Picture (cartoon, protein in one colour):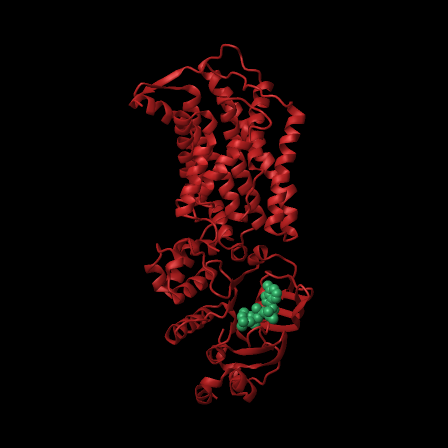
Length: 262
Length: 307
Ligand SMILES: Nc1ncnc2c1ncn2[C@@H]1O[C@H](COP(=O)(O)OP(=O)(O)OP(=O)(O)O)[C@@H](O)[C@H]1O
Ligand SMILES: [Mg+2]
């Protein structure tokens, strides 16, 4: 499915450009004790899309992903996967619906080897699929080289690749990525975004949380901006890239690149 | 002390130590997945002792058993110990700890619950089976099997060491080589992420208790075969095995084995050199000394989280 064309043409509608919705969040309210972290978040991710979720620290980006993957139960609102209500289903069961969640801070199993981590990613399957392993190794050749290495000793970039590879081992249709560029050098970030693009082109839908708004919006088809637990903007990625508010708040240092693009 | 004396003591120590190692696994596995010091594990061990007695009392052993009969009796005792040990561990997790986890109770509450459960269980056993020691029904003639450097090794001693080694090999295989084991290790390292991979934490925790409980139960049966069974029998071996788990590095399966063996041998030599009154002092002196220099134990905490 080629999704690159429509994005240029499309006026932002909030609908998913004719694609069926894979993930839909409707008016989610999530609390940590008395703190309301999400105050009615709604968003849609269409099949085959890359959707960016932007926002400052503490805006509720990670909370949104956690509610989508069942790590947190919303107090009210709905989570729908292909139109089916899945809120209230625990994360270990929700993975059977084809959700992969690459958590913030990578969180590889530090005391397991690279290969063991990848096999853990396939835990939900009867046994790991060799084809998936080959795919991960071809996307991330460095993981193949390091397959016997204990993961805690990998570099930050390698750990991020492992975290993504691990999630792919579970055959996700929807991959939730929580700040994959966090703390990584620009060269590695670019490399990882290239690979994310490839993963999407191979058919996996991505919901991408990022602080690195410029990179994210260049990869994404559409984007949402969260502020203190609520969606304040949603638009085509290209429109967000050239929006003065977004540029002032999130693209300060990369304004020129955004200009070229717009 | 002659060489043959040393061998005498060493054999006693290895027999004792292999039991400690098996019990210590129960502490270390549960600590690995829940960061819980399950002090009621000593009662799982005790229950295994009674499980053996019950099984062998139901199927009353013949007075002069043949070799095959003896083997069957032993198997029966092992099954009885495993069953009751596993059952008590399973019930303990379901009845005592799981409700606390649901409520996100603090570690202190878990600890107090563990101690309370321990009191409850051994008093329950005292009430049910009587507050006096009972011998394990005779399953075989406990004769010498072979000699090492002039030290005779009898059937019970051989049985204990062989059964312990088999169990240790099995648990090591299960934890490191099976899917169930990978679930246990993943939960030990990061339960939240493990469940993102599809690991059902409750199931893993329950299985971990049962695995440790079955081993502790069999150890109780073996211990009772060597000495006797009593409602308070769990306390001292339990504490020593707990110390062994800490000595080896709590959460670390191989560490628990090493720690158990070490403390068994130390205990045997302490008794030999300083008398029975010092029996537990030596092991705990070693524990304190090792922890002074290596606070995370000999092999370090490995299954568990670093934090
Ligand atoms: N476990 C928690 N307990 C209490 N409050 C929490 C917890 N996790 C998050 N919060 C609060 O919820 C709000 C949203 O947090 P969240 O982690 O979703 O933000 P974020 O957008 O991912 O931020 P960052 O970019 O820093 O990762 C914040 O105010 C945060 O303090
Ligand atoms: Mg976050």
